[in-house]
Image 1 (cartoon, rainbow, N blue to C red):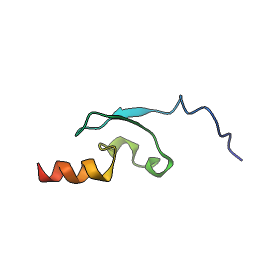
Image 2: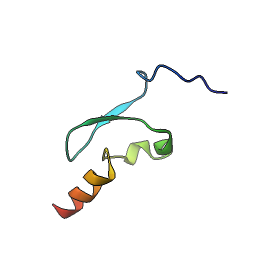
Image 3: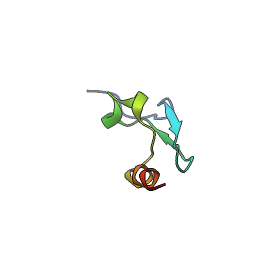
Length: 49
C-alpha cells in the first residue's frame, strides 16, 4: 500500500488559459507532459478563443 500524506512534493504547472497553478494528478500519470489546462472549463474556453 502506498504512503498517503504530504503532497507538497508533487510537480505543478500553470494553466495556459487562466494562469492558475495546478498539481499532478494520478489520472495524468502517463500524459503529464501534454497536460496544459487546469480544468475542462479552461480546455473548452481555449478552443473558443
